[in-house]
Length: 256
Image 1 (cartoon, rainbow, N blue to C red):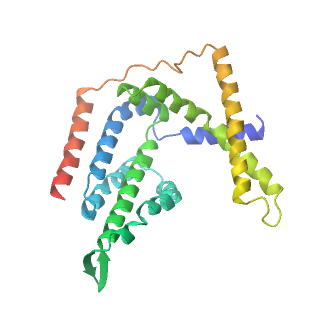
Image 2: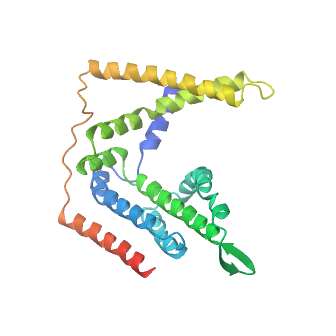
Image 3: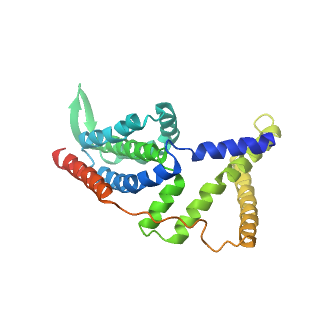
């Protein structure tokens, strides 16, 4: 295999890898996805000044990380990559809500500071939980679960195609970035205007790739269904597990 194609294959395989096999991933997804949805709703419903409840909910992804023996460094790295977007969401709160909320060690804390801190903590807790469980189940298992929850078939198919061919977009973007770097001297070619041109060119190239892929799929009998997945069903034990976690989340909301 050519080195370039081998690197793309390894990148795609690493992105798809999880801690469980395909069969176990399917079985786990039936329980994990509803629990994750309930967890996200519970965290979002916390009041804007209740930092204690958010921290208690934060024990859930931490415990899951330890139970599944997931790489902590990888999860932290991804959280750090997303942190600028999280900080931007709460950056304006201290400026809009300047009412004094309390005093800690002689420092006045405004309501905007507390609410902004709660938003940041909520975001980190929710994103970390999504990262943890995305490393436990395969993407196809997630799509099967979405079908079980009656999510529109067109949307699920789009997700599967995006996941399958995302590595082509990444390779195209890296090639364009490498070409620009080799042709740029003294900072020229790295301006915002030049980057906008590259993004437009990338869009045109991906559209061409998508058309070629679609024509190839039609030629091979594609009718809208990528795979006829086996039926996934809720068993009594799985419903019990989901109910117990739902009760735990409700108790945390009531107590804290």
